[in-house]
Amino acid sequence: MIVAIDGPAGAGKSSVARLLARRLGFRYLDTGAMYRALAWLALERGIGLEDDEALARLARENPVSFGDGETVIVAGHDVTGAIREQRIDEAVPVVARHPAVRELMRERQRALGQEGDVVIEGRDIGAVVAPDAAVKVWLVADASVRVRRRHAERFGADAEALATALRERDERDAVNTHRAVDAVEIDTTELTLDEVVDRVAALVEERR
Ligand code: DC
Image (tube, rainbow, N blue to C red; front, top):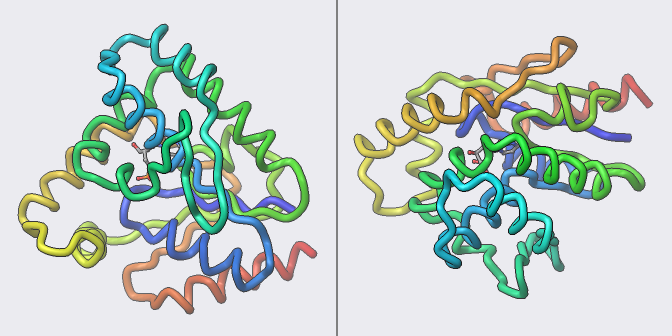
């Protein structure tokens, strides 16, 4: 069974998808980490973020993989921590919007999601990567809460700057974000993490 968790930055996708997977004993696939790893590698190799051909080649030659736990590996580097830096936040929406890059990533995501039960987190999973997913959830949250959550993750960051960065990312990621028409929307603004996971777990139970 595939459970697709999509939505904008800060809506709670990662926390929900991770905890849900752990609770249900499903695998967890973070597709954002794959785009982040490619952005990291492009910066490392000095490849222009607008150079779609070079980026697609880079993606083809360097498939992102996941190690033990949630280790993210690309081109032999453990980039688990590095892909969460601000410079990657800024580069990744640009890298992710090239159609050739998306096509490659989606193929790989489909392959990684093929076996067994999996929770897949992203922006286009229910709509494009896995339109047959048994459960599709679209998470949303008020902007102020999304900023607060990012602030809690990035110790010492300036809240005002984070709010601006989040707004800019929303704009740049709009083109990469596709909501499935049949996704169930959950507004996480007033909910705890456990409450959101309970709701998604109930949807999974309904489909079993
Ligand atoms: O969810 P995140 O912040 O880790 O996502 C990182 C970037 O990758 C973000 O710019 C959106 C993009 N992305 C995408 O275009 N498609 C996905 N399925 C997942 C993420």
